[in-house]
Each structure stands twice: as C-alpha cells, then as structure tokens.
Image (cartoon, rainbow, N blue to C red; front, top):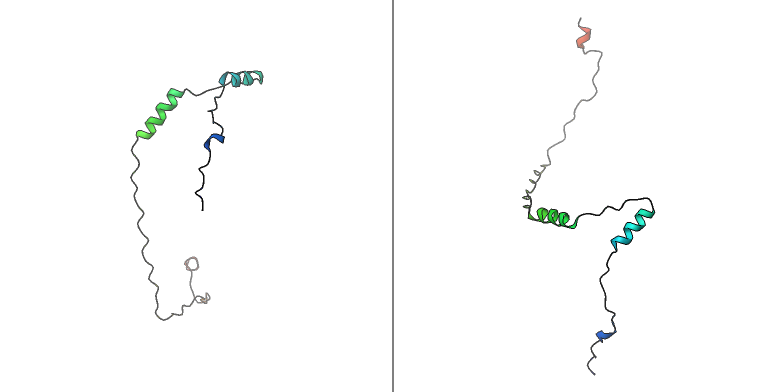
Length: 94
C-alpha cells in the first residue's frame, strides 16, 4: 500500500478580515432619517477589564434535603365525618 500524499494546502483561498465601514453606515442612517450611535471602544474595553478584574462570587452549595423516613407501621383509621347535631358551636352559646 502506498502512503497517502499530503493534501495540498495551496488550493485554499486566503481569508481576509472584514472591515466594517462606519462612514458608509452613518451615511445610510442619515439618509433614512436616523442618527448613527457608536460605542466608544476605549470605554467598552475599560468596562470589560473592570468586569474581568472583579472576584468571582463564592459558590455556596445548597444543603441536601433531609431523608424522608417512610412510616412502615400499621395504618390508623381516622374519623373524618362528625355528626354536627351534637356539637355546640361558639356562636350558639350566646
């Protein structure tokens, strides 16, 4: 078996960085009746540096929930229906 020939890198086009023309964008905005607002790159860099310099908050893990203990004892019958004819309510005493 013959060794594979290395791929020719000369066939790839050279990628150039895209430069945004702010003057053209300002002109388009003015023609549309708008005003072009651009951020000051020095201020943006200063704020990004200040954000990066801030200490990270300390991670406090949550406490685990307590384990629920299932009652395996016998079931208890609870009377939920009461005959209200024999019960004296507070407003009936007056």
